[in-house]
Length: 111
Image (cartoon, rainbow, N blue to C red; front, side, top):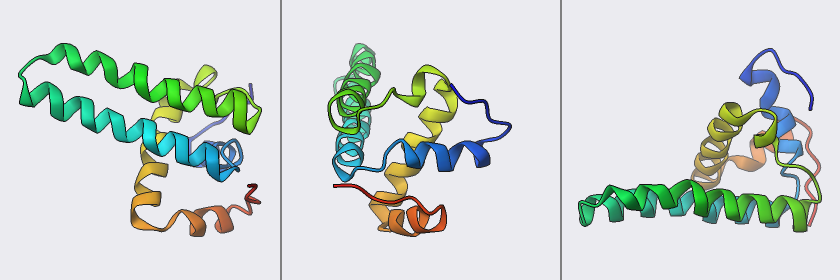
């Protein structure tokens, strides 16, 4: 796994590892379930539901890497930066600005 000195250096690598739209869509769904698990845990005041958040999110993400993107998840080498990047990508998708990031870092999108 490649070494990075900063998150700023890691971010373009992360985007490259998510060049396929389907991979990003699976990540978006997985990250959405993080918020669902948080909401459910507070609604039912049962914080065991929080354990589901990483299990569900990483299941969606890793399936997309292995079967769609065809690469190894960056989480294995850079777990904290990957987590931060997952939420950053989620935000950019929500705000409709992910394409700007892909263009800025010259990431070719695949189908």
